[in-house]
Amino acid sequence: MPTTRVPPGPAGAGRYGNRRAFERDRLGFLLDQQRYGDVVRLDDDLYIVNSPVLAEEVFKHTNTTYAISRDLLGEATDGSRASEDLALWMRARSLAGRGLNRTSLRAAGDGLAATVARHADSWRARGRFEAIPALEDLSAHLIAEFCLGPETGEVPGLLARLQDALLPPALPLPARWRALRGRRLQRAGRELAAEVSSLIRRRHTTRQDGSPSVVADLLNTACDEGALTHEGATSVVVANLFAAHETTAAALAWLLLLLDRHPEIRQRVRDEADREVGGRLPAAADVPRLTVTESVVKETLRLYPPLWFLQRTVEEPAELAGHPLRPGQHVAVSPFVLHRDPRHYDDPTTFNPDRWTDRPTTPLPKYAFMPFGGGPRTCLGAHFATTAMTLATATLTRDHQITRTPGITPAFHTRTILQPHRLTLDITGRPHPPGRRPGGGRPATAAEPQDHRSSRCPFAGAPRATRDTGSGPG
Image 1 (cartoon, rainbow, N blue to C red):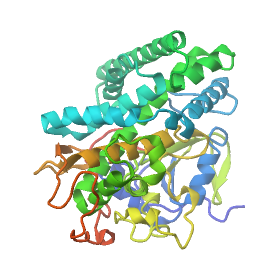
Image 2 (cartoon, rainbow, N blue to C red):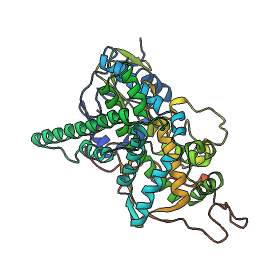
Image 3 (cartoon, rainbow, N blue to C red):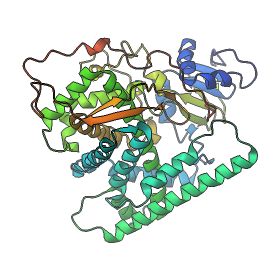
Image 4 (cartoon, rainbow, N blue to C red):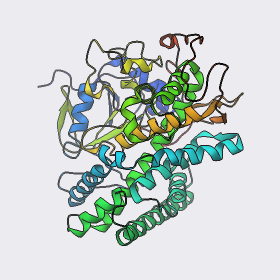
């Protein structure tokens, strides 16, 4: 018998008494819950997990004890182990994951960096760009070209339309307006699925022998062999397109903001690109040598994981750290909180990329770093996203100077994923100080950069989220 039937947690009036406090300051509220322990009762229906070990238990048992109860469009799904749809979905995910692996990325050559360079040139022509829309357009093209080939049709624009339709309203809507919004959402989803379906079929008939393989080719082969339906192939590509483009864009926005705040680290990234890549476009094969850049990407994902709040529905009676769970309850994990736990990270609010390259004295628990979730439903595009971010960072930093627009102060935005709200960036050509030549590395007379270990990340500590009334934890 468990010694404690109900976990500790903040006092709240009524069944959903703590939801208001959460909505006022989502990230700060979740950080504050660490004081109650590894399992926290937010209300009768929702428990919060603050332990990597318990987070692993929840995510490893997704699709069995725990389930994802809503799909991409927010519709209720049968995520139980008995669902035939779930089995088909997991098969499609597995096939798509094979198409997003390291071998496929290496075969893509410098295609990802070429797409980044084209977008950067258009931003530079304007001199200034709004970070999230511009980076979402970039990442939509990156993932669409990788999944579908060079012909992406209307996919990037349809992705943007679907995302706009999915964004929760800032204020509660009347019933009639909610119905209109629901129809708009369904229409956007159908249009994107139809375009992806058409491109997958077209790729099947027009692909030339010897051309680089993309995810759609692997799925088409599986359809030919009867292992997958065309509808299943379409649905998994749509899900990966949507998830990968939004999260990659948000993480890149945070990364550019951090490099602007820490110019000494930006210079180290630039020097590394000069040294390891030179004047050509970087390719996925270069990533193992871009250790500084890759550590900057990882540290950005630690401080600002786009998937800041992950939730599962209890499918069958279970226990979590001695606390009984009943079907219908929800268990949530915040990577934002786990990544800032001082039990696992020294000075956790400090932006210190070297924490990933210095030899650690104590191994990090597996789920203490989980920017893409975990278990059988972990984000399939995790390796693609980190590779794309590394190549984009090297390309943008080497060839351009990107800084926060003066007078602009972004804020945390948590209505969907974690984004720097209202961030505008200025972009110019790369500056070349006296004694430095493009590709020439650090001059002998250059002063050493200041110690970045003492630099604080923007919005360090327990930040306040932008106030909104979007989708909450339940």
